[in-house]
Length: 160
Image (cartoon, rainbow, N blue to C red; front, side):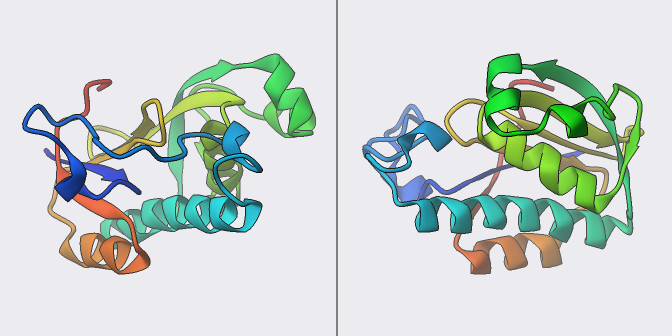
């Protein structure tokens, strides 16, 4: 299985242990103090598009919700209670639903794992870290994601 860490963090700014050296915004709650809403939303969109780039290269139109944790206060703040009431572990999710699930994950309202059998997965760590794995290399997706301004590093997810 191929596995990548996809982030907004430039790997050149890591120390020899892999820790990120620069101080940057790391969450939705940083809007207004450390990041503008415009920059946040552009970055969030890049993460969503990264997932779609890999899905497209894998020829998937939908994937499955395989793990889900809710922060009910944040779900409510994001006005997503109705949407989340239609989500359950094992549900096949469309690209529109993936978009909403990823937004809610990046905004710390939920945590989820998305996958397709043992062929593909997407999951999230803290501080805007995303991990994607696939049974085949996805060079077109990697190039597309890097062109968008995100960084793709070969990396085994600590959460899988």
